[in-house]
Length: 129
Image (cartoon, rainbow, N blue to C red; front, side, top):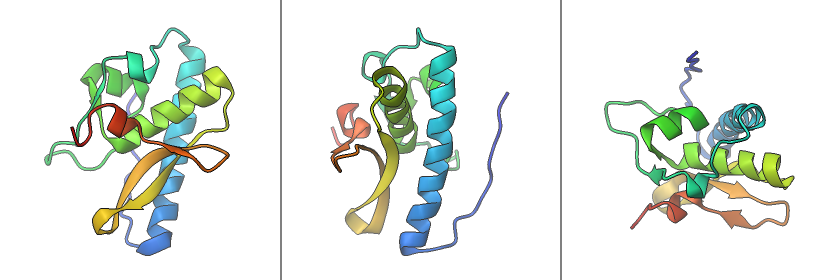
């Protein structure tokens, strides 16, 4: 079953970041449920999935684990929510997908840990390389 939350984030600044963070939290929760129900799912970094931007003909979407596996690629929100979910479910770590501001005022999804550190699955899986 495919479900879409269709929204237009018209807010700016911190409000936009909070809106994106809410969508990331929902995608992470869905990924956590998927991983609990499918424990043989490979770890993100061992899955063969690579970072790629969504093609211009696809509007921004937050794809969950089975979609990313099928495609073989994901963008920053897809990869961060998968990684945070697997760390939470499989290692019991309080990891969460969040957004940070990057160059040009753009938003980028990463994994944030309780101690404030960040992990960037997109960079690990080929972004910028």
